Image 1 (cartoon, rainbow, N blue to C red):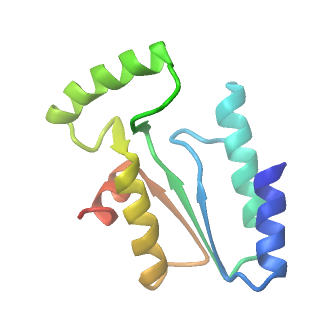
Image 2 (cartoon, rainbow, N blue to C red; image 1 turned 30 degrees about the vertical axis):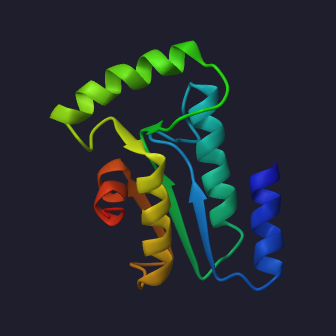
Length: 127
């Protein structure tokens, strides 16, 4: 797997803090392939042995894409409206995730492995 191999190479190169973007609901025991694979990757990356590993589990990522994905577009339109009522519950702009990742690197950790769910990503990624 590319992600695990990248983590291993980063560790071998001296990386002490690895950031992994996963997904809300990631679980190695999930019946859903996507969430099961995300959960398995989380476990494998943690096993690499970084001093610190921060796992980001965003909900639906809001972004503008070049390619056409009609079902995703419909979901984003719906979630854009829902986000006005429940701003941190079901979605997060990719820019917010990026700011949260930068902030994570710049502040002390809360343990060897930190898992940040959607609400925490919003909080950490505030502009």
